[in-house]
Amino acid sequence: MTRVSIVQSTDLHHRVWSEFLEMPGLRLTLEQACRLWGVDQTTGADVLQDLVDGGVLRQVGPYYIRADLNRFCA
Image (tube, rainbow, N blue to C red; front, top):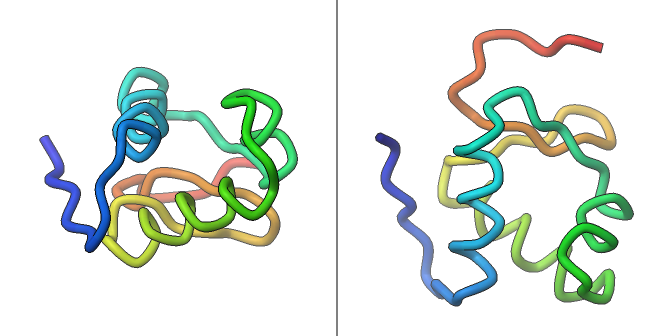
């Protein structure tokens, strides 16, 4: 299991990371993520960036995916 090491860890951070853990192939744009979690774009971007900075997600083009995936499938 990957450990999330981020400066600020909120319930939303855990919720977002849990979704990516439950669905390893999940890839979302910022807009999709905001709709899924019912947050505004600023909040969504902050949480996703925290998880990217923590090394558990990565951004490939407009998509956010798990950092431990070996390849990106379009």
